Image 1 (cartoon, rainbow, N blue to C red):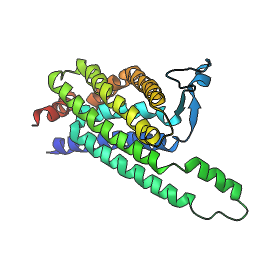
Image 2: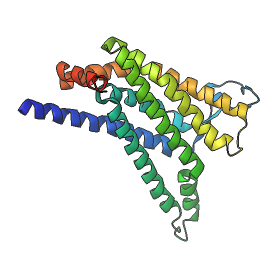
Image 3: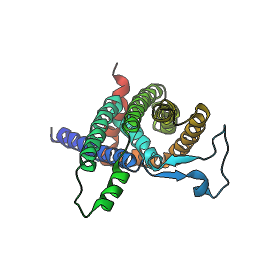
Image 4: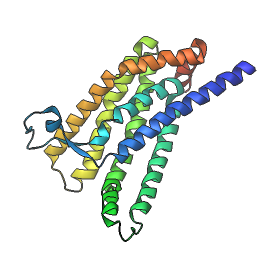
Length: 247
């Protein structure tokens, strides 16, 4: 009985730890989303002209976002689709909560001698409602798709040697959907971008996310090893198989 309580406590602690990384990274990505950077300037190359798009400008939010996908794969591996759905809906709730608080804060009347500080605060923390809705929809659809594809791949290839296949296979679809939904809703439907510019930026963002998923594969393998040590091999292997045994 004591062993079962210890294992349950460790599983709960591990989920809280993974969820904390997941939540904080997702919220950080949303908060820094207003910062737009030039990919050409970053790489020190001449402006790229693809499908009529002169500049490749991206939100700084794409930088930490691959960590969210890595956390999704780790949670999916050990806690299954139920775990991913739980953390996904929690994250949507807390992101919405953060933006509500920021909306209230940015609309508070500033002190009479601090108008310049208030303007800077509003500029940094204000985001358009369309962008918020687009990012939340993209996040929800991408996460649910990722968890389902990961589940299908784990049913067919469940060995620890196939972690890379489950992770890359699920990211292949989820990141494609995530990359384009934001651009289509926030920019194409509002007329801020044309079709070819959306395609160009979406493909480049998708390529970046997919490359980072590949580059971060060692992190997933290390996490798998570390979790096995923390929980014990038998318990960790049981957790991996629990989801695919459910109908």
